Length: 190
Image 1 (cartoon, helix red, strand yellow):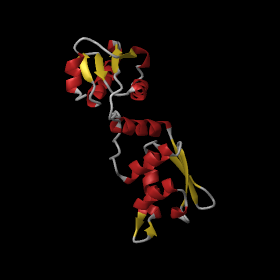
Image 2 (cartoon, one colour):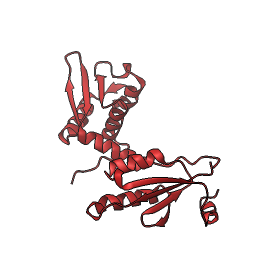
Image 3 (tube, one colour):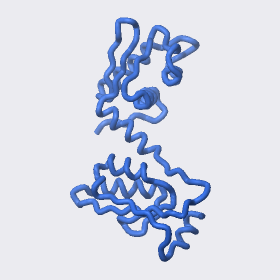
Image 4 (tube, one colour):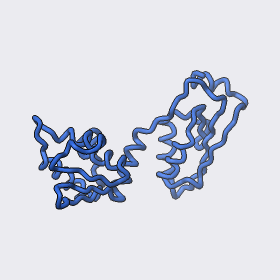
């Protein structure tokens, strides 16, 4: 089992910045604060009393490379090219998964979103993880494999189903009225 990277740590910031930069980032070690805003934010944690701690930065990069989360190489002009690996992409997707929340709109659009799934037993870990994530996103369980919410969730469901590799087993149904909806309006404070 691989160790997870602690949120907010310097290596976490490197991975997060790389994922924002489409998986490839070039940083100048000669003038580290001279780059784009996204690079400046990453580099801030490596400054101590106005001096750039290059050795610490390279050590964190080496640790991430040893864990097969990114590749890096120093270029001749003093720059470092960092590339997110496949495992690094998975790691950043896991962080996005951990930080995911539904956008609760100020005014309800009158549509219910019903998520139904029939994930086979051989994918039970994915099924259980999918179910737990729906609960953490505050979906209301109508049955073990049927959840409902009044909030837009199309992108989140698509992302979750893709991450857990169960897309073909999940459907999203829209409805504007059903018997017993008053209980759910009260539950969601609509």
